[in-house]
Length: 202
Image (cartoon, rainbow, N blue to C red; front, side, top):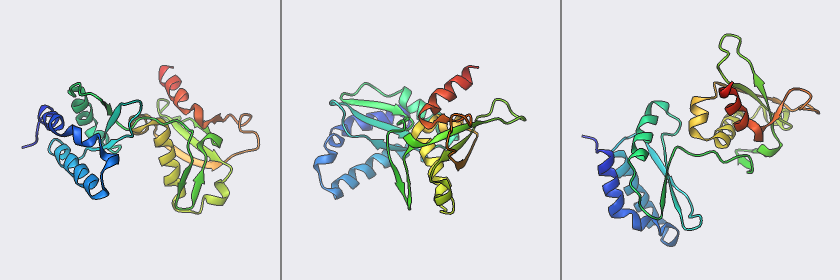
């Protein structure tokens, strides 16, 4: 029988102090603690995972994720909704958006989201769907790399966060960046979140 949210949080209360010192213990000790947390979380739902962020101004973030699997989102929301107040923790449902101020470097793919643009795409069969074409100057150079499109998907996921990526964006493709992207009807990738919010309001 699976544990209730209350049972998971009772376990967390009893053990959370150890997780405040993760950066001060050996890798083996870290692995043991992280495995114990994952086991406790899987006692509630096998499809949920977590991340513990570096402390910011004394606050430690505990991020709960279903890794984009929407059929488990309600388990994330329920567990976070029932989280007790436990200082110095902040409990967060889903991997949050991180904006575009980062460099993506993976499997020979190196991209700067701040230098990328997107073109909104229309689906005449479904005017409520959101489609985007992600454009970068490196497209011709990188498009034959099998990691390229997965990297584009990951970049968009990182920019908008887990929940919006999984529930709001219906189609993503990639292409070359023209010399004048604004004239081509494109928007800076940094404006993607604003575009999605405006699209849903209209």
